Amino acid sequence: MVITLLKESIHFAWQSLVGNKLRTFLSLIGITIGIFLIITVFTVVDSLERNIRDSVQSLGENVVFVMKWPWTFGPDYPWWKYMNRPQPQYFEMTDIKRKTASAEAVAFRIGVRKTIKQKNNVVENAIVAGCSYEYGTIKNFDLEEGRYFTEVEADGGYKVAILGKSIAEGLFPNNEPPIGKIIKIAGYNTKVIGVFKREGESMLGNTMDNQVLIPFNYIRLLMDVKSENYEPFIAVKAKPGVTNAQLKDELTGVMRGIRRLKPAVEDDFALNETNLLSKNFDSLFDLVGIAGAIIGGFSILVGGFGIANIMFVSVRERTNIIGIQKSLGAKNYFILAQFLFESVFLSLIGGIIGLLMIFLLSLFASSAMDMQISLTQSNVVLGLTISIIIGIISGFIPAYGASQMDPVEAIRSN
Image 1: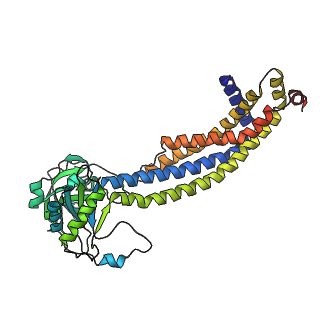
Image 2: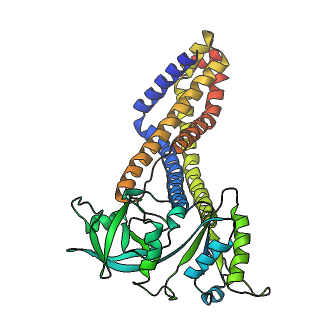
Image 3: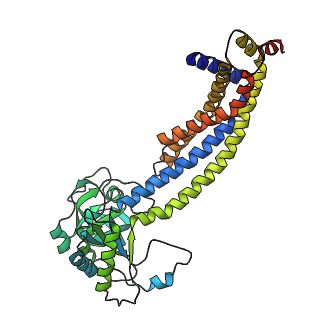
């Protein structure tokens, strides 16, 4: 019976669509626009959130960053207090490594923009990052070819470099192999020992594609590492089983001891962790999602009235058929289910059209921007579910009215 109901409902719905194209178009456009708006907002928010979380995770898991500035901002952000704080120094990294029992790895990083040359090929304003050896243990990245520098190369300040994919393509066009080649960083001959895999655009700007990684003791030749013009940081990764809260508690005591702060003096450093970035964006994503749901909800409400209008007209046009069906023994629930199936089918058509529009838009946006925007399976299911619910709600009253008709009166009606 379910198959019969489905076949008849699809047949009647299709006849209604074909026979009243303009009316159907005007009625379904509300559902289509509503699903399009809601799922588009959710798709964009999900894509942005996924990109940001991937960027945050690339900073390292279970990692605390010792920095001058905190990552949390509020209405009473005392920037003037943080302005006078000292920058983290390399010797503090070595002290933390020696004194922090809960730390698995500790690394120092500082960056500067320099011009890089390889014969006639030049990359200007490239980010040259100098880091200590254990940075490779903390930072999540993959090498496409070559290797990471050794501890001897890091401590000795060897002139070696690992290139980001975009930097490598700029210096070595036409797929020329870069490993073992010599490049010039600010005039210094440097041997290329590795190339990072392409990461793509990062929402936080921490992609390795446009960076060159060199040992910290080498970058001392390129810049004044004690200058206040740069923003170095110390990354501390917790040992397995140690929470970030435990690591931060120990780091607070270690850093206060290193800087010889008296008990009554406030901390002159910030301990940042990656989940702070995620929390800062969560409220923004929630707000955008709510706004999109409200706007799309109004469109779906209008579309629901359109579906209900089609069903009232459909019931009126098929009153004689309803009377004949009931006189031949059709039960009330059969008539009710028949029109409900038709209402759901019409609503699903609007929802599917909206989802197809989002899919095409996501393909275009992904090709136009350096960020993957994809219509996820969960959002497809959500869009179809909303369409089914709207179809049931919009079609119930007309369907119930049809199921309660007196068969004699229905047959005699014009």
